[in-house]
Amino acid sequence: MGSIPINGSSFTRRCADRLHPPGARQRSSKRMHESPSPEIPRSEDEWRAALGPERYHVLREAGTERPFSGSLLAVDAEGRYLCGGCGAALFAADAKFESHCGWPSFTHPEELERVRLLEDRSHGMIRTEVRCARCDSHLGHVFDDGPGAAGTRYCINSLALRFQPEEGHLYKDDT
Ligand SMILES: [Zn+2]
Image (cartoon, rainbow, N blue to C red):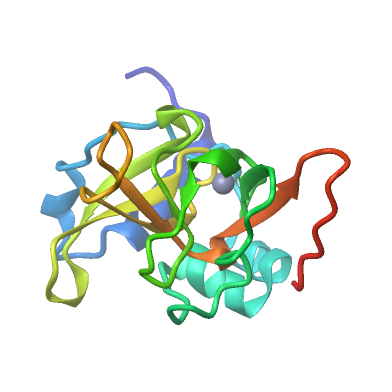
């Protein structure tokens, strides 16, 4: 590879260290989707200020909201679900379904390229983490027991999303 912009390089390095701490290096080679560096080069302080503590914990520290606590769980309106970090359109309302798992669930993202999938071996489980491809924020996990044609269930934190109702439809977000 040729010369890398200094800003991009330092951001990537810092991110990579956070995402793949020492001891977890092997995992970085098991990425299911290769993706370019995040397009939103924010410092962690900037993320914290922009998101507030709850969203920051989920999006930037791969936290999980309590099951059945999310504000978007019961939303059944027309519209789209945007990344809570950068506003990328990630899921369409018609991909949302009631999974009874306690988190908003979708059969598939609007475009597969808008998310990236990583192996997650935390908490004694092997799961597939879902991140926003644009800003690299944590969204949730994907499982293979979904009802749609693809068989996938994207189990996504409400705190990782913002709902954008279709024009003419009203929806009051409580955040
Ligand atoms: Zn994003």
